[in-house]
Image (cartoon, rainbow, N blue to C red):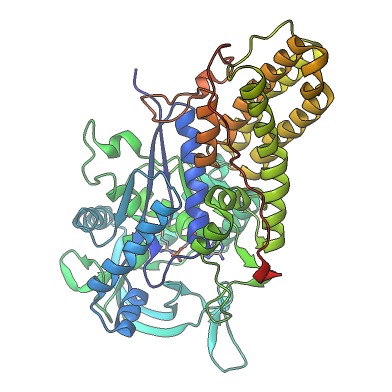
Length: 521
Ligand code: MSP
Protein backbone atom coordinates (compact mmCIF):
# COMPACT_ATOMS: atom_id res chain seq x y z
CA UNK A 1 0.00 0.00 0.00
CA UNK A 2 1.39 3.41 -0.85
CA UNK A 3 2.06 5.76 2.03
CA UNK A 4 0.36 9.15 2.31
CA UNK A 5 2.60 11.99 1.15
CA UNK A 6 3.74 15.14 2.89
CA UNK A 7 5.48 17.94 0.99
CA UNK A 8 7.21 20.65 2.99
CA UNK A 9 9.36 23.55 1.77
CA UNK A 10 11.71 26.17 3.16
CA UNK A 11 12.01 29.52 1.42
CA UNK A 12 14.89 29.45 -1.03
CA UNK A 13 17.63 31.64 0.35
CA UNK A 14 19.21 34.67 -1.29
CA UNK A 15 22.84 34.01 -2.04
CA UNK A 16 24.00 37.59 -1.49
CA UNK A 17 25.47 36.78 1.88
CA UNK A 18 26.55 33.92 4.11
CA UNK A 19 23.95 31.94 6.05
CA UNK A 20 22.87 33.22 9.47
CA UNK A 21 20.58 32.15 12.26
CA UNK A 22 17.41 33.24 10.41
CA UNK A 23 18.13 30.81 7.58
CA UNK A 24 19.04 28.04 9.98
CA UNK A 25 15.83 28.63 11.94
CA UNK A 26 13.36 28.43 9.04
CA UNK A 27 14.97 25.24 7.79
CA UNK A 28 15.19 23.74 11.26
CA UNK A 29 11.46 24.11 11.77
CA UNK A 30 10.92 22.28 8.47
CA UNK A 31 13.39 19.58 9.39
CA UNK A 32 11.66 18.89 12.70
CA UNK A 33 8.31 18.72 10.94
CA UNK A 34 9.66 16.48 8.17
CA UNK A 35 11.23 14.06 10.64
CA UNK A 36 8.07 13.90 12.72
CA UNK A 37 5.92 13.20 9.66
CA UNK A 38 8.27 10.44 8.53
CA UNK A 39 7.88 8.82 11.94
CA UNK A 40 4.12 8.98 11.45
CA UNK A 41 4.62 6.94 8.29
CA UNK A 42 4.36 9.67 5.65
CA UNK A 43 6.28 9.63 2.41
CA UNK A 44 7.89 13.03 3.05
CA UNK A 45 9.40 15.31 0.45
CA UNK A 46 11.40 18.11 2.05
CA UNK A 47 12.70 20.81 -0.30
CA UNK A 48 15.15 23.62 0.28
CA UNK A 49 17.48 25.62 -1.98
CA UNK A 50 18.79 28.97 -3.09
CA UNK A 51 17.27 32.01 -4.80
CA UNK A 52 19.96 33.20 -7.18
CA UNK A 53 18.55 35.79 -9.59
CA UNK A 54 17.63 39.45 -9.36
CA UNK A 55 19.12 42.85 -8.93
CA UNK A 56 20.28 42.29 -5.36
CA UNK A 57 22.38 39.25 -6.31
CA UNK A 58 23.69 41.00 -9.42
CA UNK A 59 24.80 43.93 -7.26
CA UNK A 60 26.44 41.64 -4.71
CA UNK A 61 28.36 39.88 -7.49
CA UNK A 62 29.50 43.19 -8.96
CA UNK A 63 30.66 44.29 -5.53
CA UNK A 64 32.64 41.07 -5.19
CA UNK A 65 34.10 41.65 -8.67
CA UNK A 66 32.88 38.35 -10.15
CA UNK A 67 30.31 37.20 -12.68
CA UNK A 68 26.90 36.47 -11.12
CA UNK A 69 27.04 32.79 -12.08
CA UNK A 70 30.43 32.23 -10.44
CA UNK A 71 29.32 34.26 -7.45
CA UNK A 72 26.12 32.27 -6.92
CA UNK A 73 27.93 28.95 -7.46
CA UNK A 74 30.16 29.85 -4.55
CA UNK A 75 27.60 31.26 -2.10
CA UNK A 76 25.05 28.55 -2.86
CA UNK A 77 27.61 26.02 -1.62
CA UNK A 78 27.63 27.60 1.82
CA UNK A 79 23.86 27.14 2.09
CA UNK A 80 24.15 23.53 1.02
CA UNK A 81 26.85 23.07 3.63
CA UNK A 82 24.72 24.69 6.32
CA UNK A 83 21.88 22.30 5.54
CA UNK A 84 24.23 19.32 5.83
CA UNK A 85 26.02 20.60 8.92
CA UNK A 86 22.79 21.33 10.77
CA UNK A 87 21.67 17.77 10.05
CA UNK A 88 18.68 18.71 7.89
CA UNK A 89 17.00 15.79 6.23
CA UNK A 90 15.98 17.52 3.00
CA UNK A 91 15.27 15.34 -0.04
CA UNK A 92 16.14 17.94 -2.66
CA UNK A 93 18.04 21.21 -2.95
CA UNK A 94 17.05 23.47 -5.83
CA UNK A 95 19.01 26.37 -7.32
CA UNK A 96 17.09 28.82 -9.47
CA UNK A 97 19.99 28.91 -11.93
CA UNK A 98 19.42 25.24 -12.79
CA UNK A 99 17.96 24.33 -16.17
CA UNK A 100 15.08 22.36 -14.62
CA UNK A 101 13.99 25.52 -12.87
CA UNK A 102 14.33 27.90 -15.83
CA UNK A 103 12.28 25.65 -18.09
CA UNK A 104 9.57 25.29 -15.45
CA UNK A 105 9.31 29.02 -14.79
CA UNK A 106 9.03 29.81 -18.47
CA UNK A 107 6.26 27.23 -18.78
CA UNK A 108 4.46 28.87 -15.86
CA UNK A 109 4.81 32.29 -17.51
CA UNK A 110 3.23 30.90 -20.68
CA UNK A 111 0.31 29.52 -18.72
CA UNK A 112 -0.27 32.90 -17.10
CA UNK A 113 -0.06 34.52 -20.51
CA UNK A 114 -2.42 32.01 -22.14
CA UNK A 115 -4.90 32.63 -19.35
CA UNK A 116 -4.90 36.32 -20.27
CA UNK A 117 -3.49 37.43 -16.93
CA UNK A 118 -0.36 39.16 -18.27
CA UNK A 119 -0.28 42.51 -20.10
CA UNK A 120 2.44 44.91 -21.19
CA UNK A 121 2.77 48.35 -19.62
CA UNK A 122 5.20 50.59 -17.80
CA UNK A 123 6.13 50.59 -14.13
CA UNK A 124 6.63 53.76 -12.19
CA UNK A 125 7.00 53.48 -8.45
CA UNK A 126 9.07 52.66 -5.39
CA UNK A 127 11.28 49.58 -5.30
CA UNK A 128 13.50 48.21 -2.52
CA UNK A 129 16.31 46.15 -3.99
CA UNK A 130 17.13 44.57 -0.59
CA UNK A 131 13.59 43.18 -0.37
CA UNK A 132 13.17 42.82 -4.14
CA UNK A 133 9.74 44.34 -3.51
CA UNK A 134 7.55 47.14 -4.88
CA UNK A 135 5.89 49.47 -2.40
CA UNK A 136 3.00 51.91 -2.53
CA UNK A 137 3.95 55.41 -1.54
CA UNK A 138 1.99 55.13 1.72
CA UNK A 139 4.12 52.11 2.66
CA UNK A 140 7.25 54.25 2.60
CA UNK A 141 8.61 57.16 4.66
CA UNK A 142 11.32 59.79 4.34
CA UNK A 143 13.79 59.64 7.21
CA UNK A 144 16.14 62.21 8.75
CA UNK A 145 18.86 61.42 6.23
CA UNK A 146 16.50 62.60 3.49
CA UNK A 147 16.26 59.11 1.98
CA UNK A 148 13.05 57.15 1.56
CA UNK A 149 12.55 53.76 3.20
CA UNK A 150 9.96 50.97 3.20
CA UNK A 151 8.21 51.15 6.59
CA UNK A 152 7.79 47.39 6.99
CA UNK A 153 11.37 46.34 6.32
CA UNK A 154 13.32 49.55 6.92
CA UNK A 155 15.06 49.07 3.55
CA UNK A 156 15.83 51.96 1.24
CA UNK A 157 13.57 52.36 -1.78
CA UNK A 158 14.32 53.93 -5.14
CA UNK A 159 12.04 55.37 -7.81
CA UNK A 160 11.88 53.02 -10.77
CA UNK A 161 10.56 53.90 -14.23
CA UNK A 162 10.72 51.18 -16.88
CA UNK A 163 8.67 49.17 -19.34
CA UNK A 164 7.25 46.10 -17.66
CA UNK A 165 4.84 43.22 -17.98
CA UNK A 166 2.11 43.15 -15.39
CA UNK A 167 0.21 40.35 -13.74
CA UNK A 168 -3.50 41.07 -13.16
CA UNK A 169 -3.28 40.64 -9.42
CA UNK A 170 -6.24 42.99 -8.84
CA UNK A 171 -8.52 40.49 -10.56
CA UNK A 172 -7.85 37.90 -7.83
CA UNK A 173 -8.94 39.86 -4.77
CA UNK A 174 -12.30 38.18 -4.36
CA UNK A 175 -11.03 34.69 -5.04
CA UNK A 176 -8.19 35.15 -2.56
CA UNK A 177 -10.53 36.44 0.15
CA UNK A 178 -12.92 33.56 -0.49
CA UNK A 179 -10.03 31.14 -0.14
CA UNK A 180 -8.84 32.61 3.20
CA UNK A 181 -12.44 32.43 4.37
CA UNK A 182 -13.07 28.83 3.38
CA UNK A 183 -9.64 27.55 4.50
CA UNK A 184 -9.11 29.09 7.93
CA UNK A 185 -5.81 27.25 8.41
CA UNK A 186 -4.35 28.27 5.06
CA UNK A 187 -2.38 31.04 6.79
CA UNK A 188 -1.06 30.43 10.30
CA UNK A 189 -0.72 31.85 12.90
CA UNK A 190 -4.17 33.47 12.96
CA UNK A 191 -2.81 36.95 13.74
CA UNK A 192 -0.82 36.88 10.50
CA UNK A 193 -3.85 35.64 8.60
CA UNK A 194 -5.77 38.70 9.74
CA UNK A 195 -2.99 40.98 8.52
CA UNK A 196 -3.08 39.39 5.08
CA UNK A 197 -6.85 39.62 4.89
CA UNK A 198 -6.87 43.33 5.71
CA UNK A 199 -4.10 43.97 3.23
CA UNK A 200 -6.04 42.26 0.45
CA UNK A 201 -9.27 44.01 1.49
CA UNK A 202 -7.53 47.37 1.21
CA UNK A 203 -7.19 46.67 -2.51
CA UNK A 204 -4.60 44.92 -4.68
CA UNK A 205 -2.81 46.61 -7.54
CA UNK A 206 -1.53 44.75 -10.58
CA UNK A 207 1.98 43.48 -10.10
CA UNK A 208 4.98 44.36 -12.21
CA UNK A 209 6.52 40.99 -13.12
CA UNK A 210 9.44 41.88 -15.39
CA UNK A 211 12.41 44.24 -15.40
CA UNK A 212 14.56 45.65 -18.21
CA UNK A 213 17.25 47.63 -16.38
CA UNK A 214 19.43 44.64 -15.50
CA UNK A 215 19.82 41.20 -16.99
CA UNK A 216 20.50 38.66 -14.21
CA UNK A 217 17.27 36.72 -14.39
CA UNK A 218 15.19 34.33 -16.43
CA UNK A 219 14.27 35.84 -19.83
CA UNK A 220 10.60 36.44 -20.54
CA UNK A 221 9.59 33.98 -23.28
CA UNK A 222 9.27 35.86 -26.56
CA UNK A 223 10.62 39.17 -25.24
CA UNK A 224 14.20 38.69 -24.14
CA UNK A 225 14.81 42.34 -23.25
CA UNK A 226 12.86 41.54 -20.11
CA UNK A 227 13.91 39.30 -17.25
CA UNK A 228 11.25 38.00 -14.91
CA UNK A 229 10.62 39.59 -11.55
CA UNK A 230 12.67 37.57 -9.11
CA UNK A 231 9.73 36.69 -6.86
CA UNK A 232 7.79 35.09 -9.72
CA UNK A 233 10.96 33.16 -10.57
CA UNK A 234 11.61 32.22 -6.93
CA UNK A 235 8.11 31.18 -5.87
CA UNK A 236 7.89 28.82 -8.81
CA UNK A 237 10.70 26.72 -7.30
CA UNK A 238 8.11 24.87 -5.25
CA UNK A 239 6.75 23.28 -8.42
CA UNK A 240 9.75 23.34 -10.76
CA UNK A 241 11.66 21.22 -8.24
CA UNK A 242 8.93 18.61 -8.71
CA UNK A 243 9.49 18.59 -12.46
CA UNK A 244 6.75 21.04 -13.48
CA UNK A 245 5.54 21.46 -16.25
CA UNK A 246 5.72 17.65 -16.38
CA UNK A 247 2.59 16.61 -14.51
CA UNK A 248 2.33 13.01 -15.62
CA UNK A 249 1.39 9.89 -13.74
CA UNK A 250 4.06 8.68 -11.33
CA UNK A 251 6.07 11.92 -11.47
CA UNK A 252 7.01 13.99 -8.44
CA UNK A 253 4.60 16.79 -9.28
CA UNK A 254 1.72 14.41 -9.31
CA UNK A 255 2.87 12.74 -6.14
CA UNK A 256 3.62 15.79 -4.01
CA UNK A 257 1.78 18.85 -5.31
CA UNK A 258 -0.03 20.67 -3.70
CA UNK A 259 2.46 21.24 -0.90
CA UNK A 260 1.28 20.55 2.61
CA UNK A 261 3.30 23.36 4.11
CA UNK A 262 5.34 26.34 2.96
CA UNK A 263 7.32 27.51 5.97
CA UNK A 264 8.34 31.17 5.73
CA UNK A 265 9.42 34.09 7.90
CA UNK A 266 6.88 36.82 8.60
CA UNK A 267 8.72 39.22 6.28
CA UNK A 268 7.93 37.16 3.21
CA UNK A 269 4.37 36.13 4.01
CA UNK A 270 2.79 38.56 1.55
CA UNK A 271 4.59 36.90 -1.36
CA UNK A 272 3.51 33.43 -0.28
CA UNK A 273 -0.03 34.14 0.86
CA UNK A 274 -1.07 36.61 -1.85
CA UNK A 275 1.12 36.53 -4.96
CA UNK A 276 1.82 32.81 -5.06
CA UNK A 277 -1.79 31.65 -4.66
CA UNK A 278 -2.88 34.25 -7.23
CA UNK A 279 -0.29 32.97 -9.74
CA UNK A 280 -1.47 29.42 -9.13
CA UNK A 281 -5.14 30.34 -9.49
CA UNK A 282 -4.32 32.12 -12.74
CA UNK A 283 -2.41 29.09 -14.01
CA UNK A 284 -5.24 26.82 -12.89
CA UNK A 285 -3.02 24.82 -10.55
CA UNK A 286 -3.91 23.66 -7.02
CA UNK A 287 -2.92 25.88 -4.07
CA UNK A 288 -0.62 24.80 -1.23
CA UNK A 289 -2.50 23.68 1.87
CA UNK A 290 -0.76 25.93 4.36
CA UNK A 291 1.63 28.85 4.68
CA UNK A 292 3.07 29.26 8.17
CA UNK A 293 4.85 32.53 9.03
CA UNK A 294 7.29 32.37 11.92
CA UNK A 295 8.74 35.32 13.83
CA UNK A 296 12.17 36.87 13.96
CA UNK A 297 15.05 36.48 16.37
CA UNK A 298 16.75 39.36 18.09
CA UNK A 299 20.16 39.04 19.74
CA UNK A 300 20.33 39.91 23.45
CA UNK A 301 17.37 42.25 22.91
CA UNK A 302 18.70 43.94 19.76
CA UNK A 303 17.53 43.68 16.19
CA UNK A 304 19.99 41.54 14.23
CA UNK A 305 21.80 43.48 11.54
CA UNK A 306 25.06 43.45 9.70
CA UNK A 307 25.67 47.09 10.50
CA UNK A 308 25.34 46.40 14.24
CA UNK A 309 27.70 43.47 13.81
CA UNK A 310 25.49 41.20 15.93
CA UNK A 311 24.52 38.62 13.34
CA UNK A 312 24.28 35.18 14.98
CA UNK A 313 26.37 32.58 13.20
CA UNK A 314 24.70 29.17 13.48
CA UNK A 315 28.11 27.47 13.33
CA UNK A 316 29.29 29.40 16.37
CA UNK A 317 26.24 28.25 18.34
CA UNK A 318 26.73 24.64 17.36
CA UNK A 319 30.44 24.78 18.24
CA UNK A 320 29.74 26.28 21.59
CA UNK A 321 26.64 24.37 22.69
CA UNK A 322 26.26 21.37 20.40
CA UNK A 323 23.94 20.71 17.47
CA UNK A 324 21.02 19.07 19.28
CA UNK A 325 21.21 21.61 22.10
CA UNK A 326 20.98 24.46 19.60
CA UNK A 327 18.08 22.78 17.81
CA UNK A 328 16.27 22.24 21.11
CA UNK A 329 16.76 25.82 22.24
CA UNK A 330 15.53 27.37 18.99
CA UNK A 331 12.39 25.26 18.99
CA UNK A 332 11.68 25.47 22.74
CA UNK A 333 12.48 28.99 23.82
CA UNK A 334 9.95 30.93 21.78
CA UNK A 335 6.33 30.18 20.97
CA UNK A 336 6.65 29.29 17.31
CA UNK A 337 5.18 32.14 15.27
CA UNK A 338 6.26 34.86 17.74
CA UNK A 339 9.43 36.90 17.69
CA UNK A 340 12.07 35.75 20.12
CA UNK A 341 15.25 36.83 21.74
CA UNK A 342 18.47 34.87 21.75
CA UNK A 343 20.50 35.23 24.90
CA UNK A 344 23.44 33.15 26.03
CA UNK A 345 22.03 32.89 29.55
CA UNK A 346 18.68 31.53 28.33
CA UNK A 347 20.52 29.05 26.09
CA UNK A 348 22.70 27.85 28.95
CA UNK A 349 19.77 27.52 31.33
CA UNK A 350 17.81 25.41 28.87
CA UNK A 351 20.81 23.29 28.10
CA UNK A 352 21.53 22.56 31.76
CA UNK A 353 18.05 22.49 33.29
CA UNK A 354 16.01 20.80 30.55
CA UNK A 355 18.58 18.66 28.80
CA UNK A 356 21.45 17.81 31.14
CA UNK A 357 19.48 17.63 34.40
CA UNK A 358 15.88 16.74 33.72
CA UNK A 359 16.26 14.45 30.72
CA UNK A 360 19.92 13.45 30.47
CA UNK A 361 20.38 12.53 34.14
CA UNK A 362 17.14 10.64 34.24
CA UNK A 363 18.12 8.49 31.26
CA UNK A 364 21.66 8.02 32.47
CA UNK A 365 20.64 7.04 36.02
CA UNK A 366 18.12 4.49 34.86
CA UNK A 367 20.23 2.96 32.10
CA UNK A 368 23.31 2.64 34.28
CA UNK A 369 21.32 1.03 37.06
CA UNK A 370 20.04 -1.52 34.59
CA UNK A 371 23.55 -2.05 33.28
CA UNK A 372 25.05 -2.46 36.74
CA UNK A 373 22.31 -4.12 38.74
CA UNK A 374 20.44 -6.20 36.19
CA UNK A 375 23.41 -7.83 34.42
CA UNK A 376 23.14 -5.39 31.52
CA UNK A 377 19.79 -6.82 30.56
CA UNK A 378 16.34 -5.35 30.47
CA UNK A 379 14.76 -6.76 33.66
CA UNK A 380 11.60 -8.84 33.81
CA UNK A 381 8.92 -6.74 35.54
CA UNK A 382 6.72 -8.02 38.38
CA UNK A 383 3.16 -6.90 38.99
CA UNK A 384 2.66 -3.23 38.15
CA UNK A 385 1.59 -0.81 40.89
CA UNK A 386 -0.86 2.07 40.46
CA UNK A 387 2.08 4.47 40.17
CA UNK A 388 3.61 2.32 37.41
CA UNK A 389 0.33 2.22 35.53
CA UNK A 390 -0.09 5.97 35.88
CA UNK A 391 3.31 6.94 34.46
CA UNK A 392 2.97 4.43 31.63
CA UNK A 393 -0.48 5.82 30.81
CA UNK A 394 0.89 9.39 30.76
CA UNK A 395 3.68 8.36 28.43
CA UNK A 396 1.17 6.70 26.13
CA UNK A 397 -1.13 9.74 26.07
CA UNK A 398 1.75 12.09 25.34
CA UNK A 399 2.03 10.89 21.73
CA UNK A 400 -1.44 12.17 20.91
CA UNK A 401 -0.83 15.55 22.54
CA UNK A 402 2.46 16.01 20.76
CA UNK A 403 0.99 14.97 17.40
CA UNK A 404 -1.82 17.51 17.78
CA UNK A 405 0.59 20.33 18.53
CA UNK A 406 2.88 19.36 15.65
CA UNK A 407 -0.08 19.38 13.29
CA UNK A 408 -0.35 23.14 13.94
CA UNK A 409 3.43 23.74 14.04
CA UNK A 410 3.21 24.54 17.77
CA UNK A 411 6.71 23.13 18.28
CA UNK A 412 7.15 24.82 21.67
CA UNK A 413 3.90 23.25 22.89
CA UNK A 414 4.98 19.83 21.67
CA UNK A 415 8.22 20.21 23.63
CA UNK A 416 6.36 21.49 26.69
CA UNK A 417 4.22 18.35 26.63
CA UNK A 418 7.28 16.11 26.31
CA UNK A 419 9.01 17.91 29.18
CA UNK A 420 5.89 17.67 31.36
CA UNK A 421 6.31 13.92 30.94
CA UNK A 422 10.02 14.21 31.76
CA UNK A 423 9.10 15.99 35.03
CA UNK A 424 6.50 13.38 35.87
CA UNK A 425 9.08 10.67 35.25
CA UNK A 426 11.54 12.41 37.56
CA UNK A 427 8.94 12.61 40.31
CA UNK A 428 8.14 8.94 39.80
CA UNK A 429 11.72 7.80 39.99
CA UNK A 430 12.43 9.95 43.07
CA UNK A 431 9.38 8.53 44.82
CA UNK A 432 10.10 4.95 43.85
CA UNK A 433 13.81 5.35 44.68
CA UNK A 434 15.09 2.25 42.91
CA UNK A 435 18.57 2.80 44.39
CA UNK A 436 17.08 2.16 47.87
CA UNK A 437 15.06 -0.82 46.62
CA UNK A 438 18.27 -2.46 45.53
CA UNK A 439 18.75 -3.68 49.11
CA UNK A 440 15.21 -3.79 50.42
CA UNK A 441 13.28 -5.23 47.46
CA UNK A 442 15.37 -6.09 44.38
CA UNK A 443 12.37 -7.52 42.52
CA UNK A 444 10.48 -4.24 42.89
CA UNK A 445 13.62 -2.38 41.79
CA UNK A 446 13.54 -4.35 38.56
CA UNK A 447 9.93 -3.43 37.94
CA UNK A 448 10.61 0.26 38.53
CA UNK A 449 13.62 0.22 36.21
CA UNK A 450 11.64 -1.62 33.57
CA UNK A 451 8.81 0.91 33.74
CA UNK A 452 11.28 3.79 33.57
CA UNK A 453 13.16 2.34 30.61
CA UNK A 454 9.88 2.20 28.73
CA UNK A 455 8.95 5.74 29.65
CA UNK A 456 12.39 6.96 28.57
CA UNK A 457 12.02 5.12 25.30
CA UNK A 458 8.76 6.93 24.60
CA UNK A 459 10.12 10.34 25.64
CA UNK A 460 13.08 9.74 23.35
CA UNK A 461 10.92 8.73 20.41
CA UNK A 462 9.00 11.98 20.85
CA UNK A 463 12.16 14.06 21.16
CA UNK A 464 13.80 12.43 18.16
CA UNK A 465 12.54 14.84 15.49
CA UNK A 466 13.99 17.73 17.51
CA UNK A 467 17.31 16.16 18.50
CA UNK A 468 18.09 13.38 16.03
CA UNK A 469 21.67 12.62 17.05
CA UNK A 470 21.49 12.29 20.82
CA UNK A 471 18.20 10.46 20.67
CA UNK A 472 19.64 7.98 18.16
CA UNK A 473 22.23 7.10 20.74
CA UNK A 474 19.72 6.70 23.55
CA UNK A 475 17.38 4.64 21.41
CA UNK A 476 20.21 2.35 20.40
CA UNK A 477 20.70 1.49 24.10
CA UNK A 478 17.03 0.59 24.23
CA UNK A 479 17.18 -1.68 21.21
CA UNK A 480 14.96 0.52 19.04
CA UNK A 481 15.36 -0.09 15.30
CA UNK A 482 14.60 2.13 12.34
CA UNK A 483 11.90 1.24 9.88
CA UNK A 484 13.13 0.31 6.40
CA UNK A 485 10.47 2.22 4.46
CA UNK A 486 10.92 5.56 6.24
CA UNK A 487 14.57 5.17 7.41
CA UNK A 488 13.51 6.35 10.85
CA UNK A 489 11.65 5.14 13.92
CA UNK A 490 7.95 4.53 13.65
CA UNK A 491 5.13 5.80 15.81
CA UNK A 492 3.31 2.59 14.97
CA UNK A 493 5.42 0.80 17.59
CA UNK A 494 5.17 3.60 20.12
CA UNK A 495 2.94 1.67 22.52
CA UNK A 496 5.11 -1.47 22.41
CA UNK A 497 6.99 -2.48 25.55
CA UNK A 498 10.69 -3.33 25.47
CA UNK A 499 11.39 -7.08 25.50
CA UNK A 500 12.74 -8.21 28.91
CA UNK A 501 16.13 -9.80 28.49
CA UNK A 502 17.29 -7.28 25.87
CA UNK A 503 21.01 -6.69 26.36
CA UNK A 504 22.05 -3.12 26.86
CA UNK A 505 25.44 -1.51 26.24
CA UNK A 506 27.26 0.44 28.92
CA UNK A 507 25.53 3.82 28.66
CA UNK A 508 27.38 7.10 28.54
CA UNK A 509 25.66 10.46 29.03
CA UNK A 510 24.41 12.23 25.94
CA UNK A 511 23.53 15.67 27.31
CA UNK A 512 26.57 17.33 28.86
CA UNK A 513 26.21 20.30 31.20
CA UNK A 514 27.32 23.63 29.86
CA UNK A 515 30.12 25.08 31.94
CA UNK A 516 31.26 28.58 30.99
CA UNK A 517 34.96 28.55 30.15
CA UNK A 518 37.48 30.49 32.25
CA UNK A 519 38.02 32.96 29.44
CA UNK A 520 34.39 34.03 29.53
CA UNK A 521 34.50 34.42 33.31
N1 MSP B 1 14.78 34.59 -1.33
C1 MSP B 1 13.71 34.97 -0.48
C2 MSP B 1 12.71 33.85 -0.33
C3 MSP B 1 12.15 33.30 -1.58
S1 MSP B 1 11.08 31.97 -1.30
C4 MSP B 1 10.33 31.68 -2.74
C5 MSP B 1 14.25 35.38 0.89
N2 MSP B 1 15.44 34.90 1.20
S2 MSP B 1 16.28 35.24 2.52
O1 MSP B 1 17.60 34.71 2.31
O2 MSP B 1 16.18 36.62 2.84
O3 MSP B 1 15.78 34.33 3.66
C6 MSP B 1 14.71 34.38 4.20
C7 MSP B 1 14.38 33.54 5.43
O4 MSP B 1 15.23 33.81 6.58
C8 MSP B 1 13.02 34.08 5.74
O5 MSP B 1 12.14 33.06 6.07
C9 MSP B 1 13.29 35.04 6.87
O6 MSP B 1 12.17 35.27 7.65
C10 MSP B 1 14.40 34.34 7.61
N3 MSP B 1 15.10 35.28 8.47
C11 MSP B 1 15.99 36.26 8.13
N4 MSP B 1 16.37 36.91 9.28
C12 MSP B 1 15.74 36.39 10.35
C13 MSP B 1 15.81 36.56 11.75
N5 MSP B 1 16.54 37.49 12.34
N6 MSP B 1 15.09 35.69 12.53
C14 MSP B 1 14.35 34.66 11.98
N7 MSP B 1 14.27 34.49 10.68
C15 MSP B 1 14.81 35.43 9.82
O7 MSP B 1 13.57 36.06 1.61
